[in-house]
Amino acid sequence: MEQMTKLSVKESWRSVKEALQKALKKVAWLALLNGVLATASLAQGASKAGESHYNVLFIAVDDLKPMLGCYGDSTVLSPNIDRLAEQGTAFQSAYCQQAVCGPSRASLLTGWRPDKTEVWDLKTLIRDRNPNVITLPEYFKQHGYETAAVGKVFDPRSVDDGHDKISWTIPYTRVKNNRWIFAKKRVSTENADAPENRFADFNIEKAGAHLMELLKQKGKPFFLAVGFHKPHLPFVAPKKYWDLYRRDQFRPWPFQKHSKYAPEFAFQPGWELRHYTDIPPKGLVPIPKQLELIHGYHACVSFVDAQIGRLLDALQKEGLEKNTIVILWGDHGWHLGDHAMWCKHSNFEQATRAPLIIAAPNMPQHQKSNALVEFVDVFPTLCDLAGLPVPQNLDGVSLVPILKNAQKTVKPFAVSQFHRIAPHKLKVEGYALRTKRYRYVEWLKNYKFTHVYADSDIVARELYDYQTDPLETVSVADSSAYREVAERLHAQLKAFLKKQAAEIRAMKAETGGKRH
Ligand SMILES: [Ca+2]
Image (cartoon, rainbow, N blue to C red):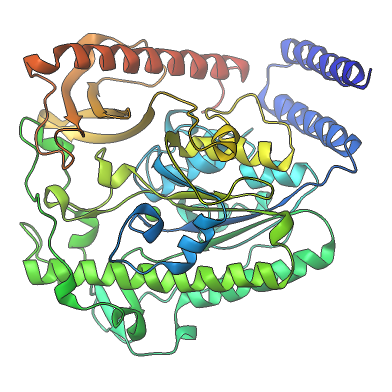
């Protein structure tokens, strides 16, 4: 009976929505309608009163690759992130949708792939392209949550005023990000013998713990986002974290060439790193500098891990760990010298694979999952865990089945993308399809995400077999031994892109084609 009532309410709202959508084509009217529907679903949420809504502690770590103890790395010291992983599930095969801050974060925080957000760069504003978008924290806000943030959550270049004011019920907390402590020149690393409170991430943790206390007092469920800056370049960390390691513990990446038979434009020259005064403008980074960078990355990971430890301690101290979902993610991976590459900005494994850890109340602990998952899955997963309705227009799926049982899978592949300029100034978009064993990449010319896919748009292809070639040394896309595999993956990617284009065309039609 109760279910019938719920269904009929849902249906009547659906019919109201459909009728209104037919009548109202203008963007402004649709924005109003979205507001009405949000209020309606809030009322529905409220009707479930008595059900406890878990809090969410949402921890973002800039440029953190899965180089962590809980991901099998035996050199790095990350005891606090490992402790969090022990309390839940560490997703070993999680992939971001585009390996650079702005697009990756815009995608995760809207639940839409980059072709839907249209944020492919570091200057497009999410809400310029999508006036009706509802971000993940905004959605929680609409469902009665207090929402608060400190540090780097959205990429500041993708949102208004650096933080997306509309997403937060409590004014965003700014913490100054001083990039160097003593260094006068723009250097890539700094071993700084200074107290931790001179470093931005220390103060971000402190502000995060303070917000947690404040939110607890408010007595409502909360969504608290805390975004740390390290291990993003420059690798600046207190001396004590550099001292956790010896330089001679580290080895340069074993394969520092471009993969055989891959197109040259698939690689990048390490633009971001080259801006630093201690790095040669081109060519191979000298081995001693490589080891210094690797050492610096480790020091920054251990430093940020210590801050995360204090934040988790604060959660425990406030007695909130029993009813709080904790999620930790790095916004993309990082090339630490593989393929002679540094930083991110590629479609390769080291740039696209990133850490994702979720610890939720009443879920199994000590889990590691090898299931392929994507960052677009975060939005529906958090809704599902918090007991909120999962919005219909998201690109991902809930990972709750995996959180309940690490042997489960929810999708056959993960997709990442990145653009390049091919020879003759040809703009190409590369789509990488990662399956359990392979990575298949197609570089498409003239490809607009709303256009009909054509085989003739393929400029180049790559295929890596991780079973035989974990370092991606040879692309076997044109090898006769892999013809069937390449054809199968091509068909999967083509079907994916055709479906995505159709969905985006329908979305544009719904907003009267006035999204731009
Ligand atoms: Ca980043």
